[in-house]
Image 1: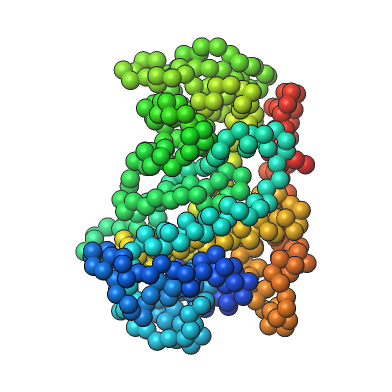
Image 2: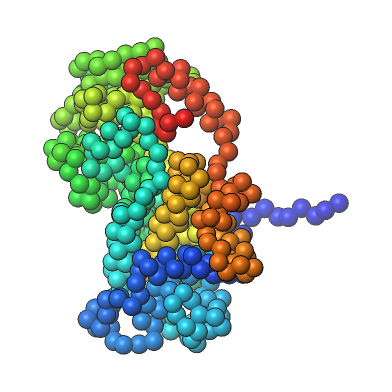
Length: 448
């Protein structure tokens, strides 16, 4: 009889981390070279580090550090010791083989200004804005996308606990978390837009409210969850000409002003919230109630005109908020953000920027695959596209003329790049037809 293993409450992402680095992928490295342009990096001699000291010429320059942090992510290198071996034996990206000490690299992680890497992330995002998104939308949704200058999703996520061997953990009797990350992505293309880090792991989502309002352009639409539910924040959206979609909190007192439309399983109405409070919501909002299965769900928006945003679109927009949850899952579990390299706050921010930089590259790769396979980007599995890079690197050993997108196009069934239609998807389509099938002008986000 086989012996049963003792139960472990440790993070499963850390228990199953890869032990060997993944092979380099020529196509990905060429894309990183094209977008980041290491030869044109801003000189760091005029920049001050975290200790307010001017940076001098050294071996660990900005191009070297960018190559190091990106390789840690995209090649799944398990820790700094393994990274130093790979760097000394074969080099990383555009950096030739070189010998370094672990102490020097650790100190550099603590002193390199994260603002330099943030500028590179902005550069990558500017390059992405000019590329096709791979998004296939029906006509009403295309009109909606053109009506708002930005349709974004915002959500926060608490980072994992620091490992016991990190110096920052020593002296803390309890678990020490790595902080909190607030992320904004585009709703349809899933591209990262902006991010904010707070070293306070228990920081409330509302603490990022002012930053989100200033980041969202005037006329833009932001989708968020109940963590941001606050009457003053809703009023700020209306007063500054910005829009939101969120979920109604249970037992929130409100007064109905008028009903816009009503069906057997939905109701669209204008309400005023905070009826029995000293600080009620000053501006009316719109509440869309829909019966999904046996449960009624209620969504809020300050877009009061159903001609600009229909009741069905309000519900579907909030349903797509889960895309950012998938993005957090991918970056933590697949790209290793659940494992913190350095316990210092500066090093954590460097890891976050590098992870989201490669996530942006990976998301663009999914868009190219979606266009090649004539599929919406929602049907492309980002995880399988990432895992397929290993098989592509092996194919390049036999034929160095093999290109990445044609390789994916040829072997997409074997690699499982297109998500299968499962029972829950069919149930959703059936319930969607029951709720919205008889409503004029309603259509799904992605055309069949």
